[in-house]
Length: 281
Image (cartoon, rainbow, N blue to C red; front, side, top):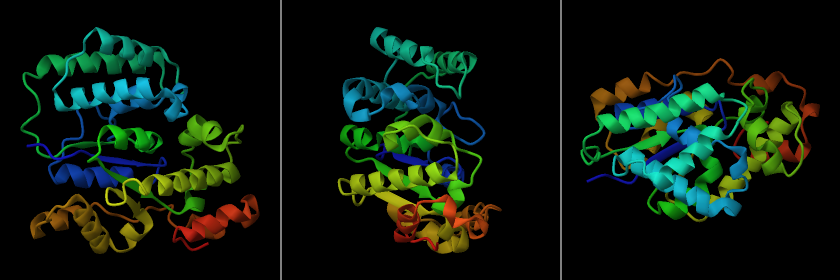
């Protein structure tokens, strides 16, 4: 019997890859069409689209996309006429980050994998996916999958504001902040704050099924971090595999870069919220 899925998200560059690698080693199936960062590219194709913002205004389409995503992930659904219409819409939309050739490759992969699969994935007890943008659709996911567990990987907001990876700010920033954004540290931190305030609000609806995983603390004390993750997943981690999992957790070189930056780049209220989230500012 399959357990409820586990989804992993975060702002790009926050450490989600390490977490999904741990899940894979624990026996989780996380998809067949993955990039080097282990993002589930089926989810990327279906949902990483600016036209779906705000999610609450596109509920029928998102519900259809979620049903198709879950059906394809579990092998319980084939692409019919309705699904093909949704897929064509996704493939046709220009996202800026992925060109038409990339989107056509995803479509071809869907049909290729579907042709190889002879039966539903009932033999996969543990499954889920990792795609940083998952948090954008968390309310809708929670409504469609009431038992879903979600791990949101977060790092120090100022460290993230200084990252070269600002893809989410470019894609969702205007919608989330309600104005034009500047791809610069100030608006990047403002996006980080808005994202995590939104998650705190959603957590009230799924308090036991949303884990805010502080990746900085995870790296500083891997044993404690792994213990908390295992408790959340309701999994016993045996000693032999525990050492294997702990070896994956390494302190990123970018940890602590906030210490050398001019605080004048950021709004004081944003720095205060970073502090409220448990980070030293």
